[in-house]
Length: 88
Image (cartoon, rainbow, N blue to C red):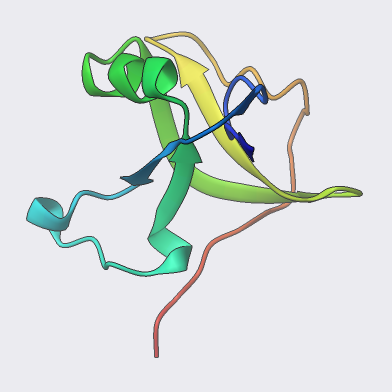
């Protein structure tokens, strides 16, 4: 079982999604990909869910920051300390 980074439900199989698409210059590596269930993946592609492309550290590891459509971030963390990966 694999856990979706957005809905956090477990599924027998999930999709790998590029946070910054390859056509926009995104890299094909673990720092630019996330695991999404088929439903959340579809919702990202029709802009119901917006990936902000940042991760914040929690007790459970890194968490993807995302929001619904044009809403504000729904991570429930005010002023999160976020980390972005920079390639050398």
